[in-house]
Structures are given as C-alpha cells and as structure tokens.
Picture 1 (cartoon, one colour):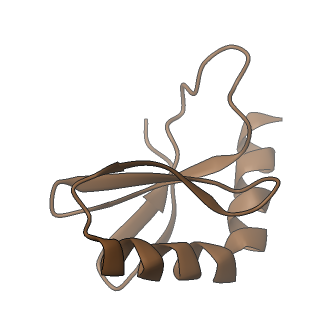
Picture 2: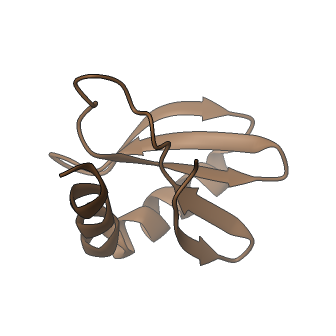
Amino acid sequence: MVPVVLRRDGFRFFFYANEGHPPERPHIHVRKAGMEAKFWLEPEVQLARNDGFDSPTLRLLARMTEEAREELERAWHAYFS
C-alpha cells in the first residue's frame, strides 16, 4: 500500500505503508515518470535520496515539499501513530 498524500503538477507525494520497524523519521517520497526522490521532513526539509530527477527539478520538489510540509507531517503522524 502506498498512501498518496498530495498530487501536484503531475508529482505524487507519498510514503510507503511499511517504512520499517521502528519507522524512519518523517519523510516523503515523490514520484513522476519513473523517477523518485525522498525528502526528510524533520528537522528540516532535506533531500535524502534521488533516483533520476535533475537538479532544477529537485530544487522545485524541495520548495514544494517545504510549502506542504505541515500537511505532509500531519499525514505521516496520523498514519504511523
């Protein structure tokens, strides 16, 4: 199961239902066209991993993640608590 939290400009912001035991700290995955990136949400938005996105797109995704950070963190904590 992959709970999608946000869709914006063709990007899907989601997390994996099985994030490990204990789960990793809050983060979000972003996918589009077979590419995927992972961003930590705490203590600040930071790129954790990238698979295919170019630098300008990563900057855009970091900005989008920061703008939606509250919503993304709420969804993370609601799902995993």
